[in-house]
Amino acid sequence: MHLNTDTIVDIEFTEWQRRIVLHQGEILVETAKSSELDVARPLIVHTDQGELQPIGTRFIVRHLSNTSHTKLSVLEGIVEVKTRLASASKRVEVGQQLHLSVDKISAVMPIDDYVDAWSKGFFYARNMRLQDFLNELSRYRFGILRCDPAVADLRISGTFQINNTDQILSALPYTLPVSVRYQTAYWVSIHSQIN
Image (cartoon, rainbow, N blue to C red):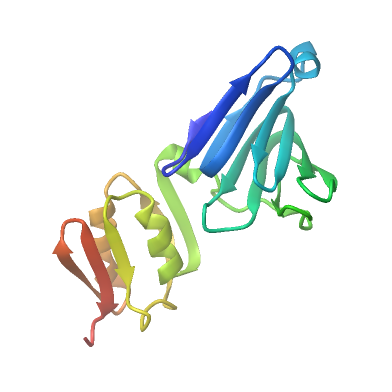
């Protein structure tokens, strides 16, 4: 299991099952090919919205604390998904993703490009709102990262290495009409260049 930033999990292994409880954040789980162990002690990933049971697979589960859904992306194999309240279930296969809430499962969609990029040290943005981009970037740096509403809807695309977030911020004025203001090293604001 690989953990992204701002991730909280509990692990409960018993004689009957192997259980990962994802409270918040994002995990990439790799399991061995299906075996007798899967039947005797199944692996189950539990979130507030439901349970995910892999069948010899590699998959990503994302649950951010400010959302009411879990996102599943299957990179290899199959994952069986069940909602917490409605007991709806669905099988998700390689190259597919969906969103899960407590009582429903979204339609299956093709997997996002670079969904596992964080596990390789970068993240990918395609026509992403600047506010959403900065929210994602803030997961990889300490402190406060604010965005002026006047520039929040500007769009950005690219591949960004997450090991140097200050370098990413310093490049923003070269691609967007924004200025980057450091109140301190840990309090950064993005504003319109006009201000």
